[in-house]
Image (cartoon, rainbow, N blue to C red; front, side, top):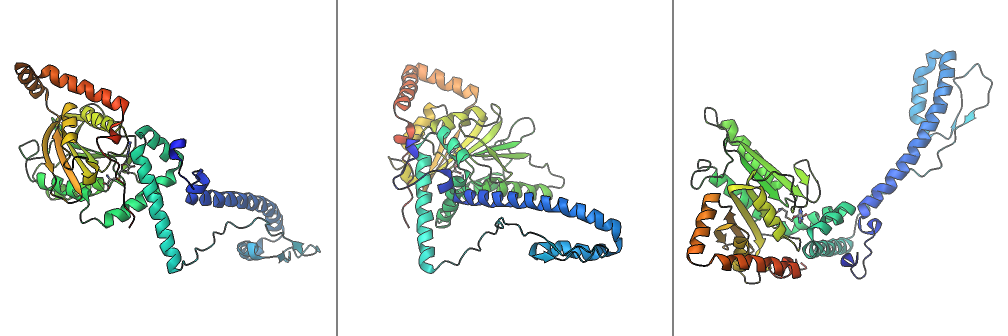
Length: 388
Ligand code: SAH
C-alpha cells in the first residue's frame, strides 16, 4: 500500500520482520532435519528389531550408539556378531543443521549504529500508527506482527527516559480512590448490583495496568478478612496479543457489551486518524456514571491545553470532570458518561435557553468536518518522537 511506502525501505515482510524470517528459515531446516531423523529412525528401528531378535543382551550399548550416531561417520555393525557383513556406512545428513550462528559481539560503533537504526524504525512505525486509520493499523500488525514488537521495544526505551509513566499515574489514581467506598463521592465507579469495577484499557500496550491493578486488588482482598472484597475486572485491548492479559481488538470495536464497563482508559493510545471512533466506543461500553480517563502527550494539542479536544468530547456526550496539565509532558483528562436523568435535565436547560438546536448543529458540523478531514489531522497532532 502506497501509504506504508518510505523511501529507501522495503516493507516486504521478509525484509522488515527480520526476526520472523530468521525463525522461518530455522523452522524449515528443523522440518527437513526431522524428516531425515524420522527416516533414519524407521530404518534403524527395522535394524534394531532384527538385532533385538538376535542379541537382546547388547541393548545398552546400542542405546549409547543411538546417542552418538549423529557424530559418527562409520559405525561398524559390531553387534551383529553372527553376521559376517562389512561395517555398514551410515550416511551423515547432508542438510545443513539448523544451527543459528551465535550472535557476534558488536563493536561499540556497531552497537551505536544498531541503536540508531532501531530508533529510526521505531519512529517510522510510530508515525505510521498516527497517520493511518485504525482498520489499517490492525491489518498492518496482523500482516507484520514483528512491527508491533519493534514498536514496543522503542516505546519502552522512550518511557524509560520520561520522568513519569502515565500508566503509573492511572494506577495510583485507582489506588487512591479505592480508599473511598465504591460509587460514593470520590470512590471508584462500580456496576450494580455487586459494585464490580470493570476497567477497559483501550490500547493497553503490554497491559502493565492490568498487572498492577490486579496485584493491588488481590493484595487488599487478601487482607479484607471480615470486610467485603472488591469485585474487579480489567479488560485489556490492543492490536497484538503479547501476553494472555490482552485481547486483540481494534479499539473502535471491542468485544464488550453496552454499558458493561465503569472505567475506560486511553493511555497514549488515541493513535488512529479516526480516534473519535474510539471515544464513541468508550461511550457505548460505559455504564451511566462510568468514567473516561485519557492521558496524551501535551504537544499533540494544537491549542496547548486541549480545550478544543474537551469541547469535542462534550459534543460526543461526555461530561468533563477535570483537565490536569500539571505534568510537563502529559495532559490528563477525566470525563464521565451522564446518566439519563442528567441528559434530560441538560436538554431541558438548553431548550429553555434556545440553545438546543445550536448544540445539535454543532454535533452535525463535527461529523461533517471529520468526514472531510480525519480528526487525526486537526484535533490531535501525531506524536513524533525526536531523535535522541
Ligand atoms: N497504554 C500503553 C501503551 C501505549 S502505546 C501504555 O501507556 O504503556 C499506544 C498503544 O495503542 C500501542 O500499543 C498501540 O498498538 C495501541 N493502539 C493504537 N491504535 C490502536 C487500535 N486501533 N486498536 C488497539 N490498539 C491500538
